[in-house]
Every structure is written in C-alpha cells, then in structure tokens.
Length: 463
Image 1: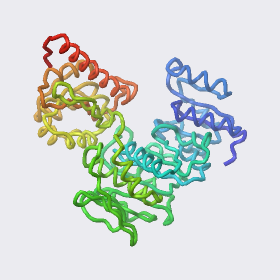
Image 2: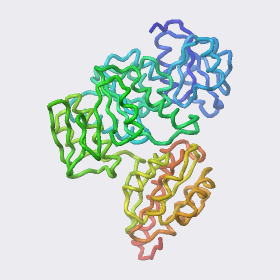
Image 3: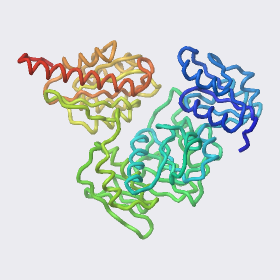
Image 4: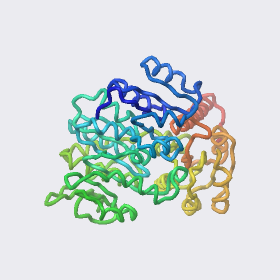
C-alpha cells in the first residue's frame, strides 16, 4: 500500500488514532487528524502530534476535510454513519479501520478473537499458553496496543493475538485472520446499531475473507453462532460445555477433550482461578487455538491452572468480616452481569447502573430475584433499571459510587457478597470501566483498613 505523499485523514484521537497517525507519518503520508473533543481535554496528545508535523482539526469534523482525503482511517469509537464520512464514501474516498490498515502490512498469522463477552480474558489466556510453550507473540487490537503498533515496532513475533470489536470490523475490506474465534453473541451496543441483527452482522464480518486454509473456532452452545456456521468458507472447529463435538473441544466428566481429525487428547483441570461456566467456554476456545498452533498439552494445562484472570472481570478483591467483595466493572451489558451472578453464591448485594446502552434489562430479572438481596443503582440508567427490577428485589438509589458502597455496607451481613457489576458503560461518571473499578477497589481497601485499625484499637465496627 503506497502511502508516500498520500492525503490521509485519521478520525478520532484516542490511543488508536495517535498510533495510526504516527505510523502514517513515518510512511511519508500527509496526515490530518479530526477530533470532536475540545482542545483542553487532549492537550498533551495535540502537542505530541504537532511536533511530528501532523495537522490537527480539533472540536469539529469539517466536511471539506473528509472530502479532500485520499484515505480515511477511522478509530473504533467513531460510527461510520456520521455525515462527513457518508459524504466521503459517496465521493469514493477509501474508508478503513485501523485493523484493516495494519493487516495490510502484517505477514505473520493473526489470531482474532471477538464476541460480546470474554474477549479480553480469552486473548490473554491464549497469550499465556503460547508464552508457556515458548512462542513469541504480540498481543493487541481492542486491548493493550493497537495492531498498528506491531507494524511500527514488531520484530520476531510468531503470532499476532488480537482482540477485535464489532466497531473495528465495520471498516475492514481485506482483513484475514489465520484463526478467527467467536465466543458468544448477546444483545449489546444497541446505542450504536439499529438492531441486534445489525450487531450480529458486524461480528460476522470477522470471517468474510477467510478460506478453507483458515480456521473458525465457534461456540457450539450459542444458537446465533450455530446459525451462521453453515455459511462459513473455513475449516471450522467448535467448543461446547453441553455436548460432544466432532472437531474442537468439549467438556465431559470434569475433563476437557480436544478432537481434530483422528487425534484426541484430554485435559483435567483440578484447580482453576477462573470462575463460572462462561470461563469454561473461554478456556476451551483458548485450548482449541493453542492445539491448532502446536502447543503441548502440559503447557496448556500449566498456563490455564495458573491464570488468575484480569482486573475488573469478576475480580475477587478480598473478604472483610466474612463479606466478600468482587469487582466486575468490565460487565457493561446484561449478559456479562448474568454470568457474574450465575458464578456467585447468594445472598448478593449488587451495585449496578451507569450510562444506558439501549438494551433490555428484563432478562436479568430471574437472577436478580433469585440471588440479589439488595440492588443499589447509580448513574443515568437508574430510572430505567429501577422500573425493570422493582418487583424483583429491594432497590436503593445512590448519587455516587461512594454512596452506593456505603449503602451496601449498611445492608450487608456476614456471608453476603458485595458485587460491582454495572450492566452499563461508565462514561456518565467515569473515564472508563477501569477508573470505575479502581474507585471501587480503593473503597474496599479503605473499608478493610478502617476495620482492621478499629479492631487493633479494641473498638467495634458495625458494617
């Protein structure tokens, strides 16, 4: 792809936009960045790119800027249906995503993982297995470093392991993974898509350019995924926690069996840090990928049993006065909250809420009724969630996460679990889910410290 002196426009100035701009500039392109946020919010980034000779359009998206470009690279958070992008498309300007740009320069096999939930856990687990097996990897995409960082700085990595979102897949044309993994499909991002079918269609783009020389690894227990499997032009393997599959992984009698052609192996995991049936699916998906890439069984066994999970994903923080605290701030949709509740023993005090993403909270009602002793709501979605669950459990509304935490302590008794699992995005109150989770962790740490100090002083602490 010839970039020298090409007029390129990068839309969006997050981590991906910055990395893309620097790559294009290094390749001799004439680079402009268009970002709608105010200058003050991104001043350090502006200064960084200005010194590299990147032109900056801040606080607006000018139609003329888009129409004058030869190539537009869109960051994941930018919808493709905004007016200036539509105008550029009609003019015939090439519009692609960052993963599409990067893939045109990547010669190593790409392992791409998508799904509504579990993507980050699965790619990190694959990475740990590969490292245990002595394989050199680059981990990036929608987690960690953008793929274009590999093109800029990669060296002798054998595999590219990439978490891929539906937003990134909207702008691909030739992106072609060696192994594509689809973990699950649930209602999500309906604030971005007109319908659930549109969301599924975006996810299915992962397989568009694959051939029978490539692999698709699919969840056999997901009905929507099963529907699309017959149309794929790939070598297809499955994973299932419910039934035997002819090619792939399945779980039976506390063993995970891998079958492919005439080969069959089995693994038994006696100790796992990862909790819940959903993580069994993530483990099996990682096992299929690892076996396809030649990782020995003992390395898979070791890496899986030593993998402690990731921050903000049903993360056990500590137990204080026989009350357990879990940080599941990454749970930004209904299905991920359901998985957390399924994995925990009641009674649960659930802190939820945030910025609504347009989905239906109703499917959570049976689990709320069964497991949640008290539901404490925060954020913009409070009214909608309160209406959805008013008949299911006791509901308390709070103005801040700090107030919600204090109210959860007032409700808790020994044997309870206090769980932050919002079912919403964080952007009404926090920069991202990480900040939200870190605030919750700090509240738990402060509470534990206060209680410990009080016990040392011989005073009684009521919680």
